Length: 186
Image 1: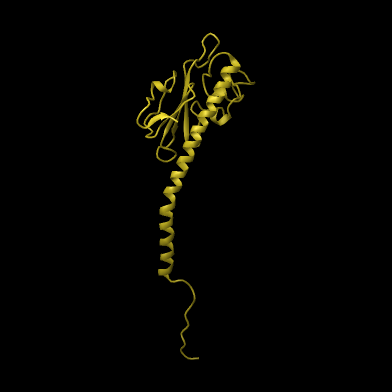
Image 2: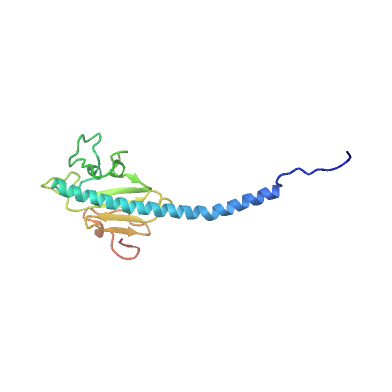
């Protein structure tokens, strides 16, 4: 009954601080690796999307006898401005990548913005698009991706690992994306 002192069970403040410090160290190691993996996945998705655009444009060329599409939206599904499948909306690309839904001339997918270049916005049999190019640039360089990509009717994907090349020419990538340094076909 006397003066026995009992110790309560639990963690001391020092023990809790050590656990928090260990968690912070693990996070400091893991988060940069996660961000690099996400950027690599976004870059792979952008290159894949460019190939899809190329396949869709080859289908457009074969189907409508007026060269390549004049815009990404012309490769997309019917929407508000186009009631049925035609050269104005060929239904060869999904609505996101074609910029039909949400409506955008430069659609965004997986952290990359896609910009399409063609000589004629509305090709016809008398004024066909014989060439085109499309550029994929990261929305936030260093976060959603670092490299930029260009694809054209030569079925080549050019990559600029530094991400400094961000535009192209309606005649194709080779006019603004010279081979050499960090630039070249994949």
